[in-house]
Length: 78
Image (tube, rainbow, N blue to C red):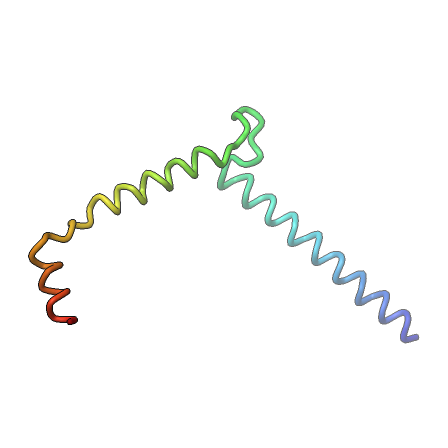
């Protein structure tokens, strides 16, 4: 009798796993073009290049330390 309960529990877990995987597939197929057959293969190089450009732009927005402020910091720390 216990083995029948174990089989039922295992079967329920397998069914839930398959259901979750199907839902993930449906969500991704409708919300993105990951599974699109018409688009070129995806490359991480493009995303990495964009990420590097964003970092470079963020670093360019940071004002460079002027000579006076760095001298003041060095004098106050000494």
